[in-house]
Length: 331
Image 1 (cartoon, rainbow, N blue to C red):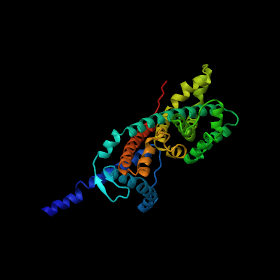
Image 2: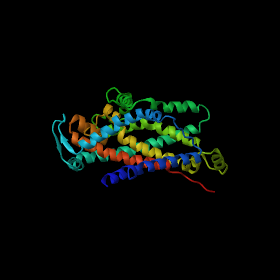
Image 3: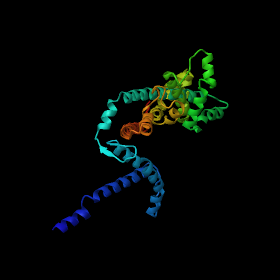
Image 4: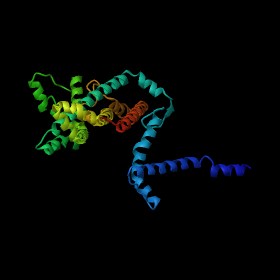
């Protein structure tokens, strides 16, 4: 009876249900794709699909899943830099982290920096997209000039800004000094914060600009012409006609700007200020590097990485919600 019972469990029980449920979902997805007019591709040999997915799967395995697992494991232990002594401490790393005034100050700094950078980037990109959309001659030239910084890496952007605003040899710093402004990002915390914000906005501006230009091209010209016939000016047409239509793009770009401000500004900070002066630009992502690779506090650094991972997952969910959001018009 035990053998019969075990055999029935293996062949017809719960293990077959997940596979059948997955197969049913795949079939429903194919049916929905056929209804929506989407084409699906079937491989005669299943191994072809596997080999096509293998490179991406390996990249995810070695550069995401294994580091994420290592960070999770280190977040709950106390270890020396060489990993010779490992002591399980539970949530002590997180408790010390949230009780640390330096970490709370870094979190507040990251929040303010990210919000300021996101608003400025989106606002300037919107103004540039609106301006170039109204240009009749030379529109392609102006778009190309605005998109040039997109090809520059953050480290290169940080090096350029560090030189231009260097208080000793930088041309922009000399201009500020000539205007009577005491500019010195190496000594004045506010100057360093302004410098990082300017570099981040300049480096990420092109990303928002590309999406906004494409979104403005999707606005029906008939609506713009009808609004013009009703006496609406260019600015009013933008806020009453164009802006509501491209609002889903706005939601998407705001989430992407927040993600950029929190996670992708390490190169700028490292090349310009290195978190200083007096931790004035020591954001959360840079503090992970400082604690882990400079101070060699691997437990605290791993706990900070786990917190940032949770924030990234939350922003990813918001991003998908923003992409799915639609604007409907009636009448």
